Image (tube, rainbow, N blue to C red; front, side):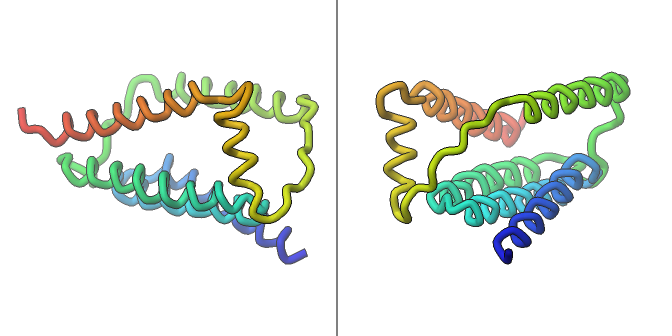
Length: 162
């Protein structure tokens, strides 16, 4: 019962923080809301007994990606004013609504397979086998490394004076 309440409390915190990321005009505060959202996701992983994923979430996303974003924000000018409202605000809103309708449809109509509960301490072996074993997702891991490299190069390009 306590685990269920904790899960839903963390889910609400995660959604509210994600909405703050989108709604706040101050970019720095939006980045801090993103950190809160990522920490809440890590807590959700803990309630789902995915201890390895919770640790990776904190180390990689909260530790590395968020610090990189905050560094980029601190090196840019006019942080408090934010970006000017674009011409495509209505179109972006309509596309976002369509995306969430399709996402909800997929969530509701997909026959989800529920994996058996793993014994404590075995999540690392299961994840390692899923990623690097037969029929693994090695290319996905490599692509995420390339995306992280692109983020670092982008931050260097933002920090460089013209």
